[in-house]
View 1 (cartoon, one colour):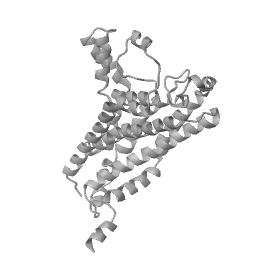
View 2: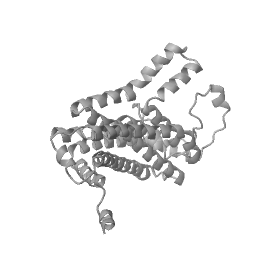
View 3: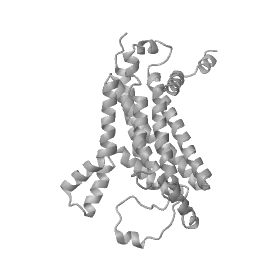
View 4: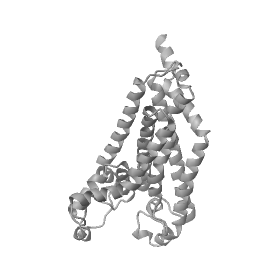
Length: 316
């Protein structure tokens, strides 16, 4: 009897997650962030239609034409669709995590939440799962919209391999934004105040997403001669300390099937290489270390937030 009763009761984190998802979906924050992602992403793809249409005339020479919807850089703008997601995606994770716990504390609702018949760790688990679920829904809707624009406006139909690559890219994007969600959740627990957590998270986003390239270039130039292979290899090694750089490498391998290596390539090596497309399995093997690093980083951030919340004292 007791066993059947225990099975009938849903885990506490599911209850918290349902409540948080409802709050996210009804918040103005979701509309602002989703609108920003949608406008920038769709505008990038729509503006690229002319260049993609020109490439469609030579579709036999461009087997990855549908993927160009996501990777093609638009004239007069510095970014492609994937770059917009890489740049703005972390803000999505920060927006759903910076006040996840601190807002409950400031509104004095945290003691009442913990007084419910749930375990204490269910609060952290539920808030993280809810944020990740909403992020996944937003990215899925955005990618379906972009793909629909390509199919309707340009008459481009993806192959099964391209669909598989886009699905894996969607999962990787959720993991990448999940890193920033876990980071913001950790700050929300450790720093207590939502404003402080938001400023710290945005500062980290500026450093790793916008200033990392300049910092890496300066550091590598101190230890190696600029323009040499050693300098390029050091820049690549230092750049991989940034989750944004790891995500860019994974994105490049998944959405550019012709990419066969992520290392430094000499001009003569590129000239002698035989053009060919890698199957999706080989592309995944190429970036398996980067994928593992992103998942591990997300797990570490969440583990710190998890342990910190369990050890904190909650005052009524």
